[in-house]
Image (cartoon, rainbow, N blue to C red; front, side, top):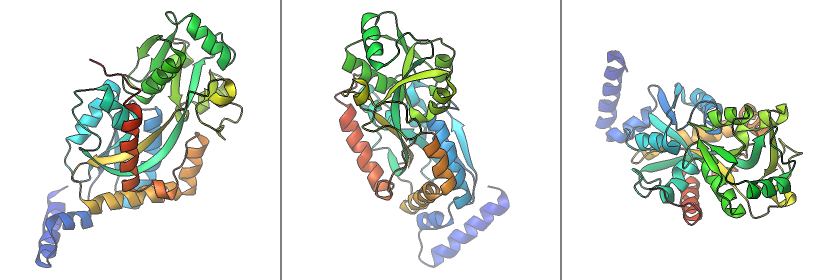
Length: 327
């Protein structure tokens, strides 16, 4: 903010102070007065990045300020999430987190530098993202039953790409491997975008990924999809069977992406941000783009900060017995 802007803000705060309004209330009422930084804890082009850009593009119009996407990679998203937790709680630094960064990370990292419930204010859920079992286009198995048999027979040779330990792609494939009773070679990347590029290039055998990252590749024939890990088929990929239909009903997985603010962010700021999310998710253009990518748009009852807080708590409880801690 320039000197003129600061003077206006100071005068505004002084005026409201004279009217008995606290400085925190005044800041919340004036918010936002400058650009907002949205940290995305993975490389550009991945599902979290894509969803964040679609929704925040509309949010910026509502809020009247630019929302700058900052991709910060490393440690399955926990590097960026730690940074977001330590940011000023003024509403100008936010993070688009997901099931990995704000749930599975808790049991995975015993010395995690943040806690999703204690160090963040939930702002709002953006989208659900079903998980797909994917493979390079020339991978030998033709369907999921053949895939299961092949991986079990060659577990020491096959490899699975993921976006880093603790990422959705990593955790969901760990769940798959647990169901199958196998331990293939894991190949980490700095985000799902680079992992998908490797799969398309045939440099890795398979991966578990959020549907947002995969629809264009599947439809383009550059990779193959064995199944979607949800009870029903996804409208964006009507020809891809569910895991239950394909012979593996025990594997069910759906990720999610949501916006969080550092703990202590003023409630009025959180309310403004949430209202911008809700407005974005009700916009026809935003909905069309998310649905085309296979996302599940949350109903109104699931979009509140309180609902997101409840989701985080339940997801931590869900993944704690599944995820094994790393040293």
